[in-house]
Amino acid sequence: MTQSDKPKWQELEIGCLVIDPGSTRYYKTGDWASMMPVTDPERCARCGLCWVFCPDQARFRDVRSGAYDVNKFYCKGCGICARECPTKAITMQEVTD
Amino acid sequence: MPRRVGMEVSLAVSEAVKTCDVDVISAYPITPQTHIVEQLSEMVAEGHLDAEFIMVESEQTAMAACCGAAAAGARTFTSTASQGLQLMSEIVFIASSLRLPIVMVLANRSLSGPLSIWGDHSDVMANRDCGWIMYFVENGQAAHDHVFISFRVAEDHKVLLPVMLNLDGFSLTHVIEPHELITREALGDFLPPYVPAVQLDPAKPVTMGPASTPGMFTEAKKAQEEALWGSRAVIDEVWKDFGKRFGRHYKAVETFQTEDAETIIVSMGGSSETAKTAVSKMRAEGQKVGLVSLRLFRPFPADDLRRVLSSAKVVAVCDRAISYGGPGGPLCSEIKSAFYGYPAVPYIANFVLGLAGRDVRVTDFEKIARRAEELAGREEPAPYEIIGLRE
Image (cartoon, rainbow over all chains, first blue to last red; front, side, top):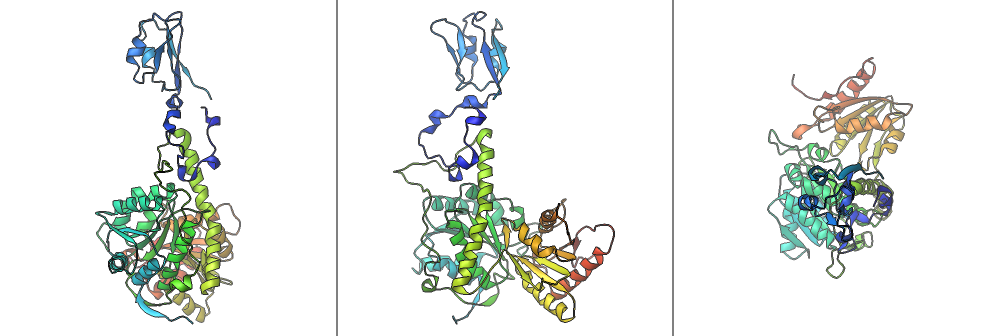
């Protein structure tokens, strides 16, 4: 969800109530990120170190290619994966609205 | 004409709360508010008021319990003063953000230290950005009446905000005054039963008080700010209805002898009555002096104030609190900003008086009017002055 998809102030429930139980399922913590990792599958050595180090379990292995990628719904953009990647396959890129 | 009863103002407030048929009172005693809640606890204990009186261990819990009760759909009342307000402060801000129509009487008392139990406005002014509707009253009758007015405004679905009714500690709470008490029969349908917009209900779960990320917080605060400004129309409408039914008319900005006044004194709360006596005396001596008593502090009636004050040459704003290291008295700085960018700005002088119950006398207001006129003749704007300071 980008800034423009979010409700306007006039659309909020009174007192900022949440009237939809269980709605945390739709809570995209990936919204918090100001930087997102971008992985180059050619350079990815499939070692899984990014998966090991990710504090949010937001790295996953693509079953078909075997390369690792990011779950943008949960990734908060901390950059640990990019720092730890031994082949420098991951670069952090700024999130634009 | 209804019978007038001589009664301590605190007890007249308790009588009004009883007549409003509140469901929950959650409070912790603190001077000078004690008589209000003490009397209510007796009313509940003796079966004169069918309400839950929650005896809590602190003001923080008092307000937390009020929030819970109001969220569950109960008409809820509390009262505190000074340090008590500071201890509950955390939840005071939450009550308004949750849009819960709690009514609180604040028996205005100075904040420590030095420790003081006497009255001034430092308690409410320290919390002036808490998002509540704030009334000030100048006598017992207005205090009694505004309990009903507060509940009616708070619970209106176009408002749904907590209301703080400011009542000067001791100089109002502990004096005996004549009151026309509003009975249940006389009240009629002025105050309909409280119907919550949304309430806590296990059958229909909602989350009240969720966390917010930076992406949503700004919008939530804008909605809250607009709700407080939006309450003004209802506030005026309720005063009008009250006047029609009970014959006592209230306004956001009360005026006395302001039409042709060259100097206007601005005051809030009980000392306005003393100022009125001073104005009458000065008028009898031929001085063109008037008085503005501010009844509504939030939402701030800037337009109304400008309308009344812009015809004066000199305005003397009386504050019963200091904004330390800031522009002087909080009321005066708000009145000055109300004039910024407008033509016809009178000279605005600021006086601090009546801190921690120090007597505010008729002669003090006479001095204030004279001093303000003197300051207006100078070239440089003067800083605020403290009345009666030994130096």
